Image (tube, rainbow, N blue to C red; front, side):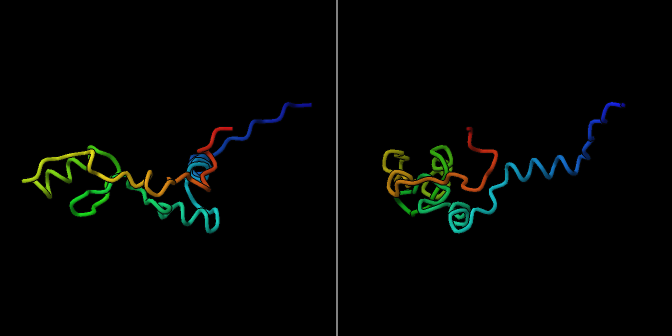
Length: 100
């Protein structure tokens, strides 16, 4: 009796497996809402002057310097949309994202 050979996978198969494990796809209506950013959207902070949303304070400062250069940047005035809405995106259908 000979030992069985270990199956070798192609790079294409390995890439497809990694993509399926990490891609946020599926999940029905909950997954669709999650991919759209949920109720809060993907951006966390909202500019108090023009309403532009940014994912973090550094990006908000870049936006502020570019669009409102005559006004001082006050990060405490920016609205935290995740706190207002009370939800964030969670990756409903991402199989490799949640630790067991």
